[in-house]
Length: 66
Image (cartoon, rainbow, N blue to C red):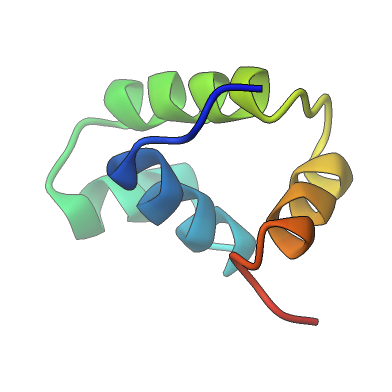
């Protein structure tokens, strides 16, 4: 499993806060398409096929709390 970049980690944390792709794009002054690309890369790098798996990854790697 590859390490996430700082930007991917930042976006992952926003995803886990249930912020939408559009709102993440606005918050970070990026395009929706860029956020979609980051989301795809995050899912691939974490070997996650859904948001539950992504949340489990974040818990195991101390990126979020219960």
